[in-house]
Amino acid sequence: MKRLVEKHPLAIRWFHWINFPVLALMIWSGLWIYWANDVYRLGWGRTTLLKFFPQSFYAAFDVDHKLAQGMSWHFVLMWVFALNGLLYVLYTAVSGEWRYLLPGRHSLAGAWQTVLHDLGIRKEPLPPQKFNGAQQLAYTAVVLMGAGSLLTGLAIYKPTQLAWLTTLLGGYEWARAEHFTLTISYVLFFLVHIAQVVRAGWNNFRAMVAGFELQDEAAPLPPGEQLPPPAVSASSPS
Image (cartoon, one colour):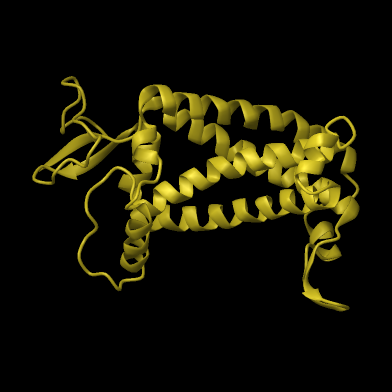
């Protein structure tokens, strides 16, 4: 016997699905900007292990010679990204969702148990909760990364008008390197996040689309979750 359990409020789902394409487009337009001065690499001295990015990459994806277009898209999307992030933080603060999202004193240990479980080392199931320790740490880190991207982006966009901010971040070169590092971190987060979604299955993905998750009737409700309104029954289409 299955039941529908409310998982994600409508506002959280909207913020999530707005942020995903906006951030993806910001990364893509950022590549158009980066092409004009692609200085970063992994290596030492004259030895380069990995260059971000080879000319073949720019040619294959038609990324080259689009600096002005990239800057236009990047700075327009910046306001959407910033506004969506601000509204998300305000909503979690007002609605009380922050109680489930912010890491607590047991989050680090819980995150480690989640890693062991995902690697197949921990055999027993994880305790039921709306967000496990790994998710709390990751989602909180992404919010802080968003603030960092906004500040470093403004510092390198207006280094003269916002000289105090650029100086605070270590100067123009440091601010640009920090902005680039945050972008790489988003890409890594995307890869891990999508892999986790695939691993969790359709039921979990549907919860972020429709807001409800199917659970066994005998399964205990995780803290913070509740049964759907009476108008929704287990026999309703999902």
